[in-house]
Image (cartoon, rainbow, N blue to C red):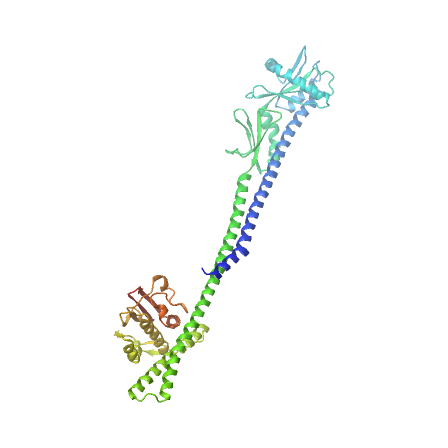
Length: 511
């Protein structure tokens, strides 16, 4: 890579790729920060939902507390109110009042009083411990509800509290209710109101993970936000997004955004490569044009110098021998023809590039065209020390531009002469193949490498094999041949081996 291309590549990298890459890094960092913010907001929202459910459950129990304050007393009055409290709250199994010297136990069925009496006796030590906490909160003006639960696997839950405006702080009031009934009957409607088909909410036992309630069957609850249920400490309430989790959605979104950014970077890089290749191609084309001008200048100088020298010699009448004069006239004629062909090639190439070359199609015999060229080239072959073999077969008459086809054949013959080394022999063959006729020119010269075989038909291109630097040429011959054959809807096939020679086969359609 030359210095100019390196500078262009560096400039493209600095102006396009580097800023884009930095922008993509910034965008990816911003995406991560935004997604983290979204996750935080989402988890805060779930936290708020769980808080509201806990608050609701506590409000239900506070309502029990208020109703009990109007119903419970040591004298067992207000039985109608107590019965209404039981009938309106099926989950409540027992109401009680405990003091130092006596206790009051109220149930729906009086036969269960003995069971709940024993149940409360087992809870007495824990209730006595919690009494100090209740009194402390009561002095601060807060009527706290304290859950008492020693056996987490028990289906019952005990709550103790001081009744509002109670003057006797030694009287502990309480309620015993069924945990699962409280969840499935009292709280379930609230759950459905909160989740609104957007979330999955569940309640499970914290000790053995037994499912108590589940709004929808979900196996993987690892991503859920979980909180203890205030009223029932042995239970845990959890909530998660329905369907895909926020982590999965966030991961997909990050992946999608990163993919778009990387795709953008890839497109920019590809565009940069395309621009670089285009610039590189233009630089190479300009170099080829420069080489072409240099070669053409050299090619023109040689015949002009010879014509000038020999014509001046003849004009000054320095040559007396008629035989020598004929030789000089012949050289002038050959160099004039050579100069004429060179100019014609350049003009024809210019017309082809501009799309202005016109072809005159008429019926012609390819064998006859080749034979006429060989007759003209007979002296040229002899002077160069070449022998030419023409192996022909009977061919169908085809429509073609005789002048253009002749030019193509002459270019192939000239190349065969230029790039032959020790074995100075050329073979020309004709034949037919399916609906086509063909002619081919074979030499036994330096050949063309596989890497350069696809490029030899490009304009201004000259193969770098062998004695190329010592061989005159413009780099237009094969490009002109290809253009002429394509104008005839034909095809050209190259077969070549380095140091063994080349075969150029031209296929022309019969119809």
